[in-house]
Every structure is written in structure tokens, then in C-alpha cells.
Length: 446
Image 1 (cartoon, helix red, strand yellow):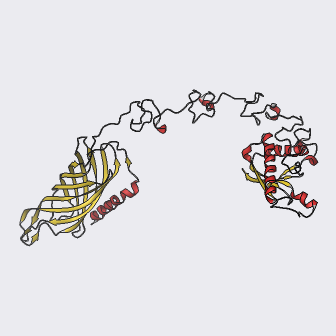
Image 2 (cartoon, helix red, strand yellow; image 1 turned 135 degrees about the vertical axis):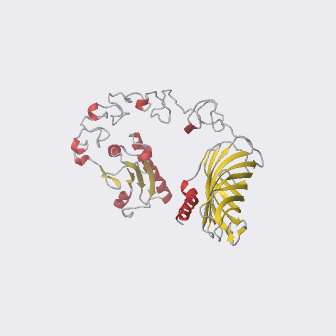
């Protein structure tokens, strides 16, 4: 029974093979004749636990019918007849030569794990009815009893290229649980297929430009191109040999070693190469990392909160800390002065320009602030609709000013709230003055 247990393990592994093997690598390009199939089988079968001792390998012949559901799955069934010779001993002690036959009627299916143009490697399984030939010698049953059968195995099938014909070699394990018997069958199969509908012979795909992409799938069949681009050459706008997809400077020729960019570019011509220049579009001295310093106080303009007034490094470029009007908080940029507008208008008064210049300098010094909302607020005088429009226009005026100071527009959002968010009473002049304000809220930090 150890041999029986071992073969049952083999059957179990074959049964789960489709689940663990993953999806098959289907490489079929042209259809061959598939559909209803008729097969002839002839081979050898070995019974591991025969009903009589000393039984040699038997001869096997069979017929099968199959139906291809698709390229991977085939339903099949048939009948197999096995012929055995054996030796036995009668109750009187006389040795005799014995022979018997059996028939197996079965239904099953095969599943392709690997499919190419010419070869399929399949696993298969089925169930059936085993009928033993009723042969008696005295009181001795030569063939044994009928039983159900469980089949499992595999096959390698070769498509000859001839319309209709294929050859296969199959290995099947037949388990007869009632008899406690196991048989191993090995046999070639010749199949003839009836394809319903159009059929095509197997042939190698055409590839005129020899780029490895068949013409059927090649969008540029006469020009070499990689498979990743559907057989078409990839664009190289500057003709430097580096395709645009990998070229960091697609409009400027440069070597591949420099990612397609000209060697060591210096866009602003200040003598500091762009990769080292903190202000690559504005000329500045190398001592300031290529950034300008208009007031010459040692603080580059993009970090100087008082860029037009000579100041101290420890005071962020301002004469003293008292001149710093902008402070970065966790969720906002705090303004220590108000932004003043013309009465009833969205025009910023000149006296607020230094304050907004500091805001611009602060944003340049804090590139981690990715999105800043400029909020406009009014007092309650006038209609709510008028105040809403006025607050939106004033917030937008601040955004426009900062953009003119080289702050990227996509970092700024203008939002007017009108009189909807007062921070003081609107019943007094002082309260209304407090409500007329601009706030700056940090929406996104890196």
C-alpha cells in the first residue's frame, strides 16, 4: 500500500498544479485547426496491484473524442482497452498461463500550462467506469471486479503544421479505489481535428524591419523601433542620440553622459553653473551661490526680508529685528502690519510695498511652503455681495503683486470672504478697521 499512497500523492500534486502554476505563457500567434477532435491511442500499461501475481506490462489501445473550449481548455472522453498476460497457480498446484482484458470508459479535461506555436504542455484529469472482462478459471476470478476510476496525468502535444493533425505523448495514472489498485499508462496519441469556421496554418510572423515586433502588431512596420514603443522609433527632437523620454534637455543637444543636456549649463551667464546656482535664472556672484544682493548686505535677495535696504545678516537682511514685518508660523504667515488699499478699491497703496516685498522674500526663503492662500476680509459696511467682490479683488491684487516679485503663481490662491469672518465688532470704527484685513494661510507644506 506504500506504492498506492505515493501515487495518490502524485495525483494530488497534479490536481493542484493549475492553481500554483500561475497563468500560462500563451504565445500562439496563428490559429491552427481546433474544434472537435478524434484520437487514436496505443501504448503500454502497468498494473501495480494486479489480481494475479507476475502480471507483466499490458498493451493498451483506445479511442477519444475532444472539444476545444479555447486554446487552453479541452473537454475529452473515450474508451481504453487493456490486454494482460500473467501466470497463476490453480488450487491443485498446477501452474497456468492466464490472460484477460479490461475496458475503461472515462470523461475528463486537459488544461495547458504552457502554449507555444507548436507545443502545448498540459495537465489532465478525469473520472470513469472500469469494467473487467468476466474471465474465470475454476473458482478463480482472473480479471477482478468492476470499479470506478480516477484519472490524472499530463501530456505534451505537437502541432505538425499540417491542417487537422497533431501528435501527443500522454502519461496517465488510473486509481481504482474499490479494488485498491493503481495503474500507470504511457501512450502516444494521433489526433485529427475538425475545425468549424475558418482555419489558418501555423507560420512564422512577418517582421519586415526585423525589430522583433511582428508586422501585425508593429505601428511602424518598415522602420526599426523597440517593442516598448510598439515597433516605432522614439522621438529625439534635438538629434543628440538621447531619446526625448530620457533627455533632460530635449530641445538642446548634449551627451548621454549628461542626460542629453549641454555640458555644465549656465543659464544666467554669471559664471556659476546651473547645478550649483541657487538662482539659475538671475545673475549673481559666486560668493552668494549665484544669487543677486542688491543692497550688498551679504544676504542674497531671495533670503533678504529687506532686499532694498542694507541690513544685518542676523536680522534677515533688515537693519534690525524691528524692521522684520513677516513671521512664518506653523499654519500661517503672520503680518505685523496691515496691507493698505485705496478706499473702496483693490489698488494697493505704495506704503504697503515694503511689507509685500518681505512676504515675497519670505516665500523665496521657504520653498517648503507649496501652497499659500491669500484671504481678503472686509467690514460690514455696504452690501454682502459688494463686500464679497471687493475682498476677492483685493486678495487677487496681493497675489498679482507677489507674482510680479517672481513668486510662482501655482503657489498662491486668492480667496475673498467679504464680511463673513469678522474678528472684532463692526459697531465701532476701530473694530471695522480690524476686520478690514488680509490673512495668509499655509495650505500645503513639503
